[in-house]
Image (cartoon, rainbow, N blue to C red; front, side, top):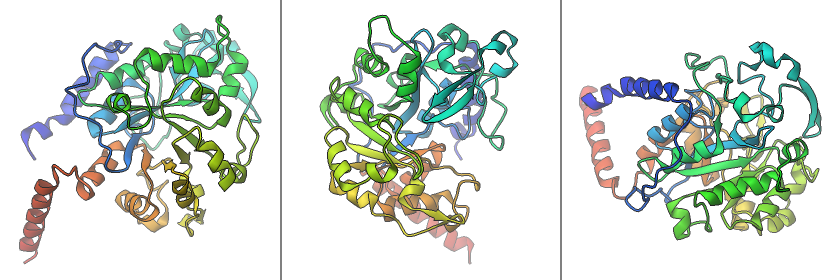
Length: 391
């Protein structure tokens, strides 16, 4: 290992110290994208699901910076709105599980019960807090079996701060924001100009130069996928921007929040033909593509093949390294899972909590064409060394 690699942990800690000391990420610089290394488009996309949240609490500045360092093609986020209409990066409509809100006495009277996606939910809702109040909360790791040392060190970030992280990266990094729970947001948050949540979402993207169809010159400079589980939101934003969109698909039992359609309704050939007028791809939960029984994979469905027949990409979610999430077929080996989904199922992108693992796998199995010769030589040298040591 080279000396520079040995110092990566120290440099990361130094970076985190700087981020902790600076509550807001600066707005984008005016640096031109022309000299940046372009995004790769020759292999499935490595999509950093809420940043590198397998290591650092999700949707924080540090999680996104870590994902970019590890090789993410896209950084992914969920967009919600505060009481005063600010767009923020946060997955859950309630703050209970991922922040210290329950310990804050000044917010004790904010607990509410609202209907969200056909169910009654009780908690501290994002929509009942102003941006200033949300910024005082500290974020923590979702899963207890992941690293807890960063709990309480980071704050919620805004959509604009998220965009800044991507635009100020040293290479071209795409963004993959979700219009999160638009029915809930539009019910509880109103803007003075009469615009909707979706309108404000698109306005922010346009403000920072995100526009252009998939693989267009503008798109390659500032890559973007807009995602949502709500098909009516995707249809609406299609009137506002030509940027590519992804229709997210939930579990078999979950109906769409806006149109009340079943999984079987929205994956029928007729519906795929309809939605392909507005989106360039699907983002299904992976266990609906290949069903699971007793933690073993069953026979794959034909959803990927049918989606491809409608010229739709498929970006399943979510790939996680821990044994709690790996099906028995993969023998506790995430590389085996990536190989199955990329080479057997044939997906076009992967939402992952472990960006570095996907990147390392792809660098080994499908390096950039310019790097292939050098990588093949290194692989042959490694094989020779292994053979020699086995003598």
